[in-house]
Length: 392
Image (tube, rainbow, N blue to C red):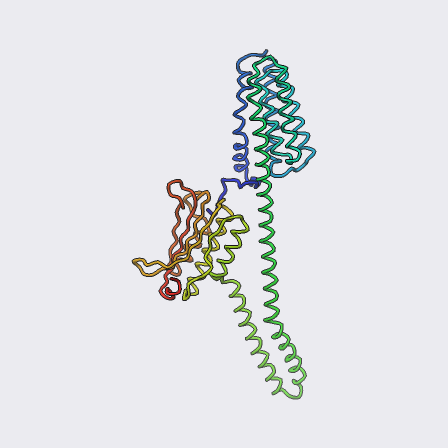
């Protein structure tokens, strides 16, 4: 789950040519409804010259439709270009339907879908019915059965308004992703400020004292070397204590704690729009090294849920269990997302397995719903002999 290179998240631009191809395939699959004009050309209902022009017009229409929907659903890069492209599609649809007959009226359905996918609702809500009305008006001038025109009214309206919802969903997802990135950046900035404050509090007094004693020792050196030596000894002692304080502070920053990671997991999942069930308490008596490994594991699991799973719900449990090898503490993180993307574990899971092995722990992964393969569950287990009473 740590390396999701195949899928493209909702509202996320494709990062590779393969992802672009997948997105284009999902958009292009709806071109199956173009079978009516294709069949009209293939049946030889027109002269060879007209058939060639019809095929060229159809290819131009499809290409313009794919480019428009592909580039401008998540964000309108150029509103004038969007409106111009829609006008171009409408003109081709009008020309082809008027020239070749009723089977080509389906092009207006794609114009309606393009309107819903690229324009704001305040504009699309009147332009979609307008496109449908033009389609009906053109169909009324043709000599082919009117039932075909009537049958296309519902797809044109439904497809257009359905795409307005898809457009809003995609753009909301983009905004949420940007907001989550902003929150993460603000959290990082706050952490840097906290580190700066703590280092100032730790070193400010010590460095001031060192400076003062250094000046005092400098004044004492010519006439009173014994007193200067005492000041130098004090400087050494203060310096060593400052070094110990700094190392302790840095170690505290570098070593994650389980309560801190549980709180962080609750915040991260909520920010990502994932319904989370995260415990608030941790058992007493867990060795520092085992707690650190579980904290790293929880961070890795929650990162995977937020970034790769596409889950709507995530459940974190922390409970002791009796095994044949003794008592263990199990941390379980289960989501209802898309599941694993392959059989080869990513670097995150490999590193986590090595960390667990250093404390005698194990890592197991499985699908949350084995029958359908949906969801991903990660179980981290570490030996836990003391403090069980408080955990239970």
